[in-house]
Length: 363
Image 1 (cartoon, one colour):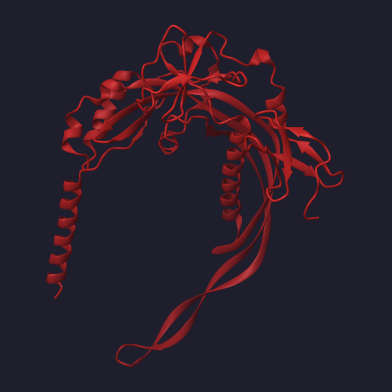
Image 2: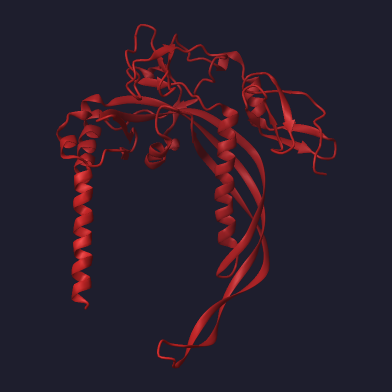
């Protein structure tokens, strides 16, 4: 059947409003905050089955929320990052983008307390040296950038992450392509008959299944650090996680998660589905494939809310703001930097000159 009405009523796990079944998305969607809840539909009874993650989010007891110590939360009105400070400390500027526009952040509900923390392992001095070497390796960076003392603005942060585990049994179907070659006659530029081999594909049906366990599939909960930069410095060694303790946070900035559990679960599922597509594709026999379809069955889904260590450098060059991120455990660096238009022009001219010389030499 194409559409089924929801029999039960379900509250949005993010804001508590009444969620509504959306037949097009096959999800419960909150009309107030837009949260899409990952429910499974029982087609025999017409009832919606809650997944463990949604139930867990709604039923987390109050004693497992909060930071276990008094904290003050402020939100940057520029980049929307939410920072958590000791009440005695007053943040003058956003730690992520440098904006002075900070306002108190009133939470609707206390945050889910982190379960684990990855302590910092790489020192500030080492990260500063690594960033200087990183700058020096960027040939297109303006020369003036390398003379500035930018590393003096380096800050240590604990960034929120969600991690997900799941056991998956996945069936797949596809069309497997097998290459074969046939001789084909053609005429060259002088009109002479020639023979060449042309590759063809023979398509045959294929099907299979696989079992896979996803262990600590990461989803960043931050809005303050650029997600593409975080992806470049992953993975964080989650096998070294320690139980959450406020002592690890002392002297560091802590970011409040802004990607809620339900949204993070949806992102994790999309990432897992993409990986399953690749894994199933590798099982298709033959030389190539098309029309691959997967049918994953997820079970044993669990999650953790953790804090990971990040060294962050935010600086302004000209009218633009740039970030450099370093993994606080491995020291791996990723960042953005301005490019000198004069150096780019010089490189283009050099390439054009080389192409011209080669063309003249081949005449």
